[in-house]
Image (cartoon, rainbow, N blue to C red):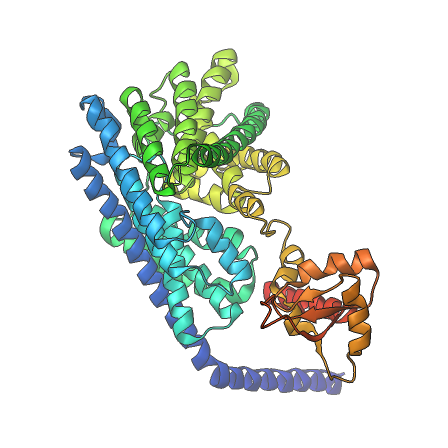
Amino acid sequence: MRQTLRSFISAHATQAVAEMRDAWRVLRHRGPGQFQFWLIALMIGVAAGFAALFFRKGITAFQAWVYGAEDVNFLHSFAQDMPWYWLVLIPTLGGLVVGVILHRFTPDGRVRSVADVIEGAALGEGRVEKRAGIASAIASFLTLSTGGSTGREGPVVHMAGVISTWVSDKIKADGITGRDLLGCAVAAAVSASFNAPIAGALFALEVVLRHFAVHAFAPIVIASVAGTVINRLEYGDVTEFDLITPGALQFYVELPAFLMLGLICGLVAVVLMRSIFFADQLGTALQDRLGLPRWLRPAASGLLLGVIAVWYPHIIGVGYETTVLALTGALVLHQTILFAMVKTAAVAITMGGRMGGGVFSPSLMVGALTGLAFGLIATAVLPDVSGTHTLYAFAGMGAVAAAVLGAPISTTLIVFELTGDWQIGLAVMVAVSMSTALASRIVDRSFFLTQLERRNIHCAAGPQAYLLSLLRAGGVMRPMGDPRCASREECEALLEQGLLIRASASLEAAMPIFDRADIAFLPVMTEEGDSENPPELIGALYHIDSLKAYNRALAAAAAEEHS
């Protein structure tokens, strides 16, 4: 018995020593590299945090100068007493300048935002467009400063992506490292915007990287904390919304009401998203029919916004004041419904007019208004078993935003961190779960992923849907002369049937041809030239090689997501 115990202790001691040696070897060989990477993540977090801070303060200062308001948090109250022609002229001139900037510095006149960051993470090895991104940041800055009815979070996220892209290019980062650095920048930007470190880190993982790999968690948390510190050095440790009426939840009795609110908020989120897409389609159709230069399109939208602002100045900018009024229950029922409808129309006009900004702040405002309207009705119908109607405004704010962003986890945490009230968690979680479950069935998971689907970029279904588009026929083919390649005669026989693939084409284009024609390979040709430089036969793309390449890409993606 004693000998058995001694052997047991000796074996475990030997194993512990071996594990300590392995740990020391890993620390010596990988530790410096990991430390360097985390240091870069920290620096990116600081840079993205300062970018978000300067963007926010710049909008505040410029908006105060343009409108002459002492406190832009109460801009709509001040704008009510402004001459009507200034309310019309300011967003019109702002839209004109925005149109000129986007026409000059972007290839398509479109503002870059969160959807492009998601695309960069999935398809661009963690990179985004730098030139168009800087132009988009300036355009969004002017849009929000001159009355555009959007939010500042989307532009800030893309600005952070530009910073991480510059760093990734400088250090020649591979795809995994580039995506991790992109996640760090996004986390810091969101954290600095909302003073929400937990939500910032989870937003980067949930929305941008779309996985929760352990290797990405530590650097993203470091960057998120750095962004939060930047915010708190300027604004202090305060919540975004300083609320007076917290309310209390009648837990068991009211839960069905919050389930119902979640479903309604899911529908409202779909209406908000569909309105933006409809406005974009309508704007494009009118632009084509009228022959309107694309640089005038934002000015036309600014003119419409100015006309609306004459009667409803609540739509100007982020809408902080109206959101606070909803969360504190300072609005009556008809005001909440009317303001939600007008805000939805204003957001659609702004984004459909190719101005700038994001959808997160508008979705918070529309959600708070929707929740308050529901709460006013619910507490009036069943006053004896209801809590305060402002609690429904909390839940509605999170539910609409979560459905629009497709981010139930991070949005729930953002609501907590924006308000500092963790007692409302159950109500928010119930409403968020129902809204995202419903909205994700009607659109492609979220506003951003639906934007990408409308551009024929298939990120919503996961890596299996878009990896084929990253693989080129020229990189997978067997070149002519290779013993494993088909003969020239065999290739020419298929060419006579019109069966071929260009070297620059993706496997996404090749796979349907294989399925339709039921052939083992496709001749690969160079790009179309002219009579002096006709296309040449350079190889054969085999179906089996395409499947193997796709399988390797899937395995690499799975390894990254689970590492």
